[in-house]
Amino acid sequence: MARLLIFSDVHGNLTALNALLRHVQEDSLDGFRCLGDVVGYYGLPDRVLEAIARRDPDFRIGNHEIGVTHDACGDDLSYQAVLAAMRHRKHLMASGRWEALRTAAETDARLDTHYERLGGLALSYVHATPAARTPFRKVCGEYIRPTHNVDWIALSDHFAAERAQNGAGLHISFVGHSHTPLMARFEAGHRYFHQATYGQPIPLDTLQGSLLINVGSVGQPRDNVPLHSGIKFAHGVLLDTDAWTVTFVAAPYGVDFARMSDELERDSFTSNMPDDLVRETYYALKMRGSFNHSVRADNLDELRRLFDALWRQEADRLLTMIEHPVVGDIAGWRVNYTHEGFCLNHNTAL
Figure (cartoon, rainbow, N blue to C red):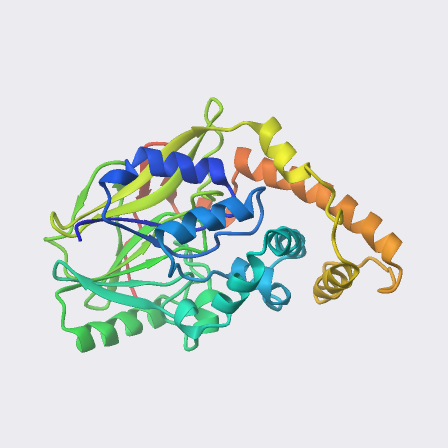
């Protein structure tokens, strides 16, 4: 196997996924590695889930998969994301795909880190963070961005232990979850952030230590790069295990806000939603302190009106996120993301 496409966080955005697959000429690829969050947020969870399962039947489970199948992942998701999760559950139940996804989300092997060795490289794949102690926290753990609140020491210790165990000269760990492209190298007590130009292969044969690569997001990048002349970019990474290169990919696609809005609003939130799922949505939202609406759980008519109104607000917010994907903690850390690539120029001791 020579060329792999590694990607994450499609979030029901079929247009972005198709653009990425066309851009990398998927017929020329030898395999796919999806790191989870196939569902959640955008309009077409059924079709995206089907497309991913055909290409990577063992794709990693993400926190939004758990949100869709298991009471919105405890307190890991915002109340807006809970609304999207419950809406996607409704659609997956109607299409007959929810039970299989629920079974996958209950399987530790699908949550835990997946390891493989290809072309002399030791590779691993997980949704959020490889350094967590349990499979669940590897899925619902910290968001790895180039910020101070990441536990870099825990990551460094984790990679040191893995290198001692596998004996490879270079270990690469691929993650998603934060929607933020990143390449960091851990060596001799230091971490080094690497810059990337999209579409330009980065040679691996001169590198030592461990690489942490966040592949970004296909369906909802959060890299502070605004919509550009009606064009958005779906992110992923190409790994060539023969040439020993890794390439960050940004695949352009035209954003059709009218179509996206129709997909989000093609029915109301509670249309065809069973009463028990309406109640479950209520209890999942009440777990969050930010949800302060005083409605009784047995007042289904009022709950339906409330949830439909909240979903209209959330649909507007999702469209705004496509246009202005602002993440404040990136701007404060000397990170420059553009349509051409990114530069993370802060190298520091652990």
